Image (cartoon, rainbow, N blue to C red; front, side, top):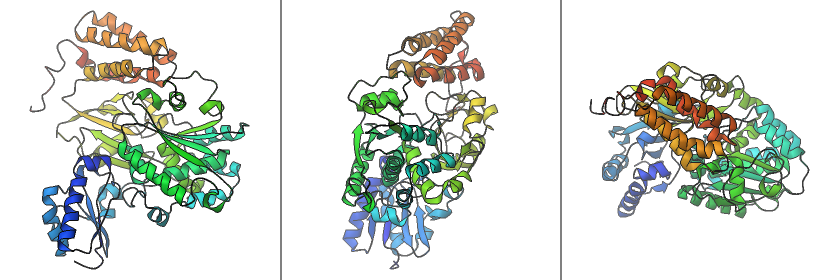
Length: 526
């Protein structure tokens, strides 16, 4: 073994751990101790190539090289190859990590450090550009910081795509002795995991973004509202916050300045509706997670009635690179009104599941074929749902749509948080439509009638249509119900539920006929 091969990087990410990364690390550690090898295990985050996890990386003179997926029973073979300098002969050898095609073709800005650094190592973070944005911001006036974000074109990455700079400007312009920064980390959409990856793999980027936001609007306190289903993210974030306080990046006199900012992590209670910003604020205040009527907007009267910046994880984690490199640099990426990049998350029946950060403008087909590689089952892909459980089901005829907020609106779809869930030709789309209504019925906060009652009636109508009970009349009723929910619901929970239902009815009508359904769809073994 060469002297340069000193570190073995093993991901400590929820998905990698679920695939055996912790067991692999334990076996390798025993191997190192038993044989007195000059190696150090570093638990980094995942690179997001989930079909290759656990993917191990070795530090060499040429750079990091990767092998994967490595299971616990393959560790002896892996260590032998590494010890005898034959790692390139290992059957699972992938070459230099940075040259892996899946990674090489991405434009990683927000996720540049993910999988590269040890998540809670402050030295690692700073060596890879961490806190450069904060240093720039500390030398700027609040208005200049807000203007930089506005000029960059950054829009909310939580799904609504509202311009971040406008939201910050409103909070800055609202006079108040107390203002707050709140990170909405209640990531609950099916097929999405980008927030989790940032929190588990590069938590300081989120903290840095929140500190910069606080500088910009004059806030001195912040909260991260984390979904309780992310225990590893909770552990990593709490450790990162502890390290940041110990090193002068949180608390008083941040980075030697006169600015103070305190940050606290709060856990949600498993309610999907708390992904909606006003429901989340209610929960943060210790109340039942229930949607507030607007106005007033949270930017004017938010947490505890004070002006509040509410952004999601990706929005805030993107802020540091904008401040570090400038608005113009970020503007170079993207298309039309959609500037910068978005982390797309490939999930479902997909061959190469993983995170792909791309500039806006690529087509959905490019994403599915060039990165996703088709279905994992090998069967034809039939439908793709983009934007979470309330996103449209898109047929093959719509896959050439550009990955762009406005382009998706034009086809009655949503890009949302960037989650992409694929289905092969065995899927029954009537079941998917029913699931959308049932999901709304379960997760509705119950405050408004269209959402609370409409979702229940929607499930009943779909059941009647699929059972052949007056399908024409009930289809008309279902369309009327969808119209009411879309136009009269208090928030996007009820307002967006009709999107997947309508898309399934429009593009996969045959699945709602009595003669078809699960029994007549191709079986997975066909």
